[in-house]
Length: 242
Ligand code: ZN
Image (cartoon, rainbow, N blue to C red; front, side):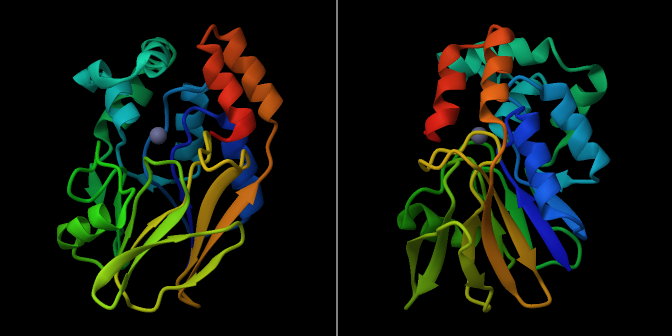
């Protein structure tokens, strides 16, 4: 079974389409939340994910897009973009976002999906070995997939302790039965210094995960952000991947 794992798409339709185009035929598409927020095409991105038959979980931006009060915790740019997003999605998209579960274990798989962390799915950042270690008891499967930090990374147990391992483009990892927390990086707003859209492929036949990057038309997304009247910083940061 070939599975594409997408996270933090953030209303960036061009990045999502580039990823869907590059993955070709897969057996499943899983997303790790933050479908909307920051970017200029919230409705189209929700539609595209539904067309692709993706299953996923709810991020903080999805919760706010669905009407949640967590919008109060957003920074200024995020808040402005979310107020705008709410006026650009229809009721069906709103219900889709609000109805995403906080956590899920796709049937027949050994993976738990969460946006932030398995113990605090909406908000916690798994950004250190200590946080990863503390989360080991919060999921029952061997592997956990998270997003939220927008940085591709892997936390794996070594001699009883969790270690952080940086992953490069094209990086391969054997899913060898050791417990791990894996982050595919962000499709629509990468923050690891590489502006290309990031995603992960999991091949259950070979028990391998690979981290992938694909180019997309960043300038067109930036122009759409500016044309929508969204904060210009949200356009600029796409060039640097920060
Ligand atoms: Zn995000």
